[in-house]
Image 1 (cartoon, rainbow, N blue to C red):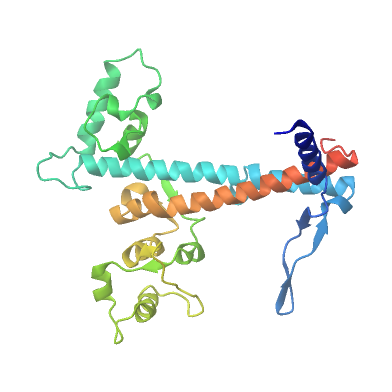
Image 2 (cartoon, rainbow, N blue to C red):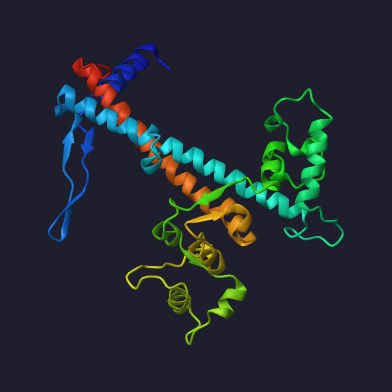
Length: 290
């Protein structure tokens, strides 16, 4: 590229970056009568204290460690942990030959597996941290989905120490917004007079005991009817060992991954807004760290 043209483009981009007039802070929505209103203010028009307050709010939304109002990064950590624990429980059911059942494969009970792992640990005292040793070090014929699980996690699962799954983030709204589709068996199971997806949605909505005002839509990217039922009937708090295999698979393979993607979007939005505040503060000579 021509040097003069390159310098001109560089100057134009820098000038564009300094146009902060479109950076806006939106306040919380509040109800006034039958409507919700939301005040907004341009960042460039804010005082130093206002910008600092907005920056701190972004930081709270990203990093807060209060269990009642977790920051998005902590929520993401929690979701990753939930996915991992669902996978551990499924591994144990694989060993028991109740998940991915195969008549040619023997079954290993949790107690037996635990004894074998304890013996392994006793015979290898030089290993101090078994959370860095994958289960594949002792079993080389596991399906790829289990290759990231470590021996400490398996031991926790064997003694029912995976804890409780917290469904708090997976609200009815989130689950139903994923949409619904029907397997061939479900098409027959929910067949109405018109044999249409619209009729099946109506029947499914009734069977799932969903609120009349809730809109349930058909989507090829959605959950199957039985998957959605498994999610909606999951208690707010449930031991991983007490979940159905359908619930564990749906959470690990679909629902938690969708929620993870939503949280990633939240993180991106708050980080971008925080960066915009920093740019405006720098432009105006404000200090956000005092």
